[in-house]
Length: 197
Image (tube, rainbow, N blue to C red; front, side, top):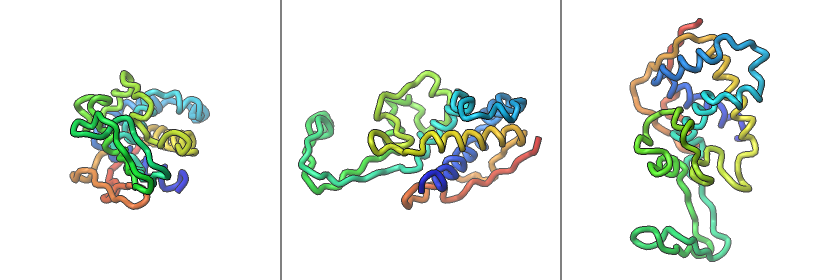
């Protein structure tokens, strides 16, 4: 699982979104088309606001791990989540399966605005989600150890593609549909046409 399937799924989802939103492909291309090969360092890629915004927005819309489950090892009381308005304490008995949906978390309009279904990488310029509001790579002690590696690899591939492909067009009119196994990948793949630079 580590960084092999997950990075390719991140790239597939990013290309799917970029092919449907050519403005961002053009911006990416403008940023990297004249960048010398030796400037595509990990440091430079991680400091590129545009490419990191694209990565985060892709993970927000299509998290590789859209749900995660845990078994409560002891009786637990969460401070909120219970009652009709979900603002009262919530008791979770030992042995209960607790499931969290990153998919739903990443579509919270209070955090990401009313256009949560839209692919808008620039939302990351003005929004810095509070801790636990965005979990593209999980969080806490069990966060993905390969987070930086995945971001660097995916950013490098996108930057290289942007240098060599002048046009990226979607060849699939269907909406994105997930195929949930251990991870969630595009059930329809990513059908695009490219025009080489």
